[in-house]
Image (cartoon, rainbow over all chains, first blue to last red; front, side):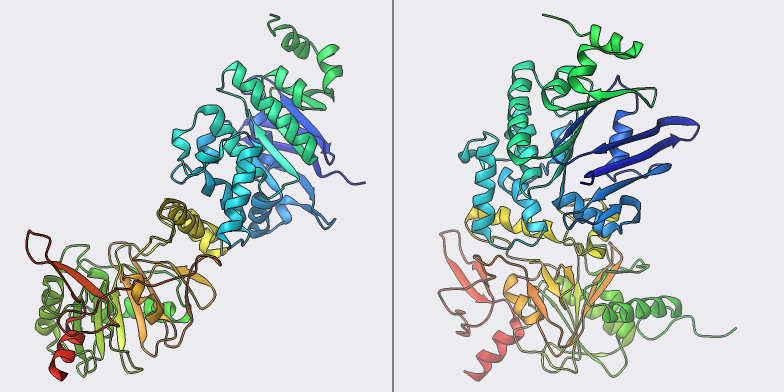
Length: 256
Length: 278
């Protein structure tokens, strides 16, 4: 068995400053890895490097394509990389406005990826949009509404539907619950967990919220100052943190 | 040096050469938007400066020029551009579609079928069909390069979701030669089928946006659509009230303030000729 995504010694330098340094890990099919750490620890830089949105200074990322071929991201042509991004990959942004096309209706947002891969039948696009809206618990009569009329939680769920409509195998998430209130967060996490389990999705989720990591991920990387200081099973790290910084992080969560 | 500073038809040597090069490239790559260094013309941007530059670059003393605006030869834009070329080049001008060798147009393609000896020059305000969905020029260029035209259908989807049909009635996007998606300028979609495999050369000039593109003769132009919502042109349930034509694009003219309206051909030359035959 080959890992879906193999990250090998990724470093990103911003001039003399380090974005992230020498990060390696393998992501297996169906597995969710959480990258946690405080602001400025290099989480988002790492996510951008491994999802092909940013060129790392050194290191390679290899992806196992559907046919079984393993390709390095920087060896792919731009056309191949962009095709991968809108078919086999998903990207859920923290701010739904970045991930959605705000000027068109919810239905068009969900249908866009289908049209991008050549679907030219309005009826079929419409019915899969309806199907996906119901899966993310958005009422069918909101399909023609603009995302501007949606609440924050609904926008985030719409963004998820838009990404999953082409049945990707790998979803990158950047703080998917950031900016939502606690009850909405809980519902979104519930939904995400259900989808990840039922679809067998693999995921990389960046978060500063340890609860999100615990609920969604099987493994976890803890970052500080651009480096991975601890890696392992999520439950293990949260129950028995070894690095001093991780201990601090775990103990600073308020127990209600 | 005593070389003439100005060539035939207004443009100086360098400008003319630069535009003709852009035109050659545009014809070689049908539907591709070729950037060119559009000059200032003695008329405001948006009044056909792109079309005027293209016409001036291809005009020869033997040409006969026709200029139309919304199908009519006698509207402000058409009259002033025609006068401009009479003054600067002295070519013969005509209102007859058959007699013209170059037709500069805004918003219409003449009803009379064009021939191999004719060239149609379109005035284009916004050459980029992807612009309303993707504001970044760097991104739209990449989308053209990689043939990522999915968003074009997002626009059509939006139309059907909102109005029950494809409600885009002008500047209807089409694919040229199976490759580039282009904006045929704000002609009604009624005229889109005329772009397809026409014997005439079709040149498009956008002055403000500094782009030239072309549809060479006998080139396939396919209007975008959905399998279950095929491309359709406008139809009227009445003929032209002056000439009785049933196959032409009709303008609605308000005749009084009591709801009176008149439907007449927008192509004045076509309408006039039909009246003459009656």
